[in-house]
Length: 544
Image (cartoon, rainbow, N blue to C red; front, top):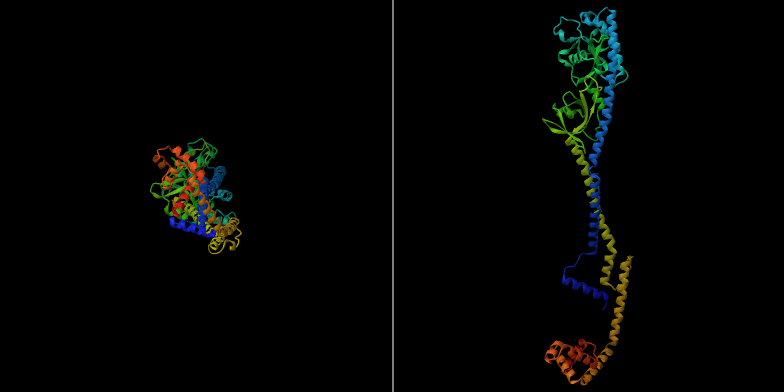
């Protein structure tokens, strides 16, 4: 009999008593999967704790903050420079016009009574206007006098003489003169200076639909502030018969005697703003900036400048003001009353005026915005990509676990299969220390078992002889028992227990134990079990 056979019998016995357990390969695969899930769960927890799954939000906020910072700085510098240039232009024009009037013998208080000199006065200012326009990154320059060439024309009370020159390509530095166009002013000045005339050209300004004119004039007349505190920026608007949206920097013309006799300034067109301040929307589609009036904690959308994804905000952006829902952790949400679309982004207040300006309460704000749905879609795609990568990694890992478990257990399973069919000594080594040790152990045990079988076969007769000799000696020793001991022994022969014998003989259990010791000693047995063996042999041989 081999040890292997004993193992097979033990396995068969297990199968009889219950269902077999999991295979080693399956156990290893399950262990690897559990280990993998533990590692992946740990990685997921780390990603959650470190905010990696919200990295898209952090990146978006960083982009918005960066765009807001550099665009707001550029706007502040650009519009501040135009304001400074506007004040300088006003000083230059005021002095030049006042000197011209003095040369003509005209008192600035009543220069309106000399319309025949207005064109001559304007002609001398043309070079100053064009040179100022060249120095300033703006889309236009203008001069408006508080007078009209013809008082007899209809609506003369609203008509004002002046010059308005527009640079059609303000983003081109060189070749400025080739891009100048006359919007308002004497046509003879345009022809003499080879300046093209725009189709919407008008001889004079109509202030009826330009409330900024009277407002700026009245503010300057009723104020004792310095000129540098009297310039004014309009909201985005379009002049009469002009489709282009513009913001005007308006500076009053003031004589030495503090007489306000006109306005001058620069224009920033919506196209110039768009070309100059469009945010980088290569990653965040429909990202745009908005330059607006800020009042009562609301952002005024009507009269604002936009730069960025023009199609979107032009088609869907309403005229209602934007209310702000501030979020300290992420981006702010901006809502319009009659617009289902919410916008998300950041804003920054930009001061266009000194603290003691006549217009110090006029606040502007620059906002970097995009539709909330678009941003959520982008963030969802980023998170979905992370989830897809995580899932793909999990699938690859499961396949790897299956491959590793199968590869690792292959020599083990092969060795165990061989043990079922051949002698352990014939099974080749697997180069797995534990399995090779087991095979070697089984081979040794099999060899030992064979030797034991041979020894049992050789010693069988001797064992039978020994058994018969001991039994004969046991029968002889029965006669050496005393009467009391024999009475106890006879009851053992009848199958009674020590307690039953004590009850039958009316003796204590301790007395029975004393008789037992003497019986064991005289019969040369070591225990009741051995005694019962001999009694069994007596029954079989009819010695009882």
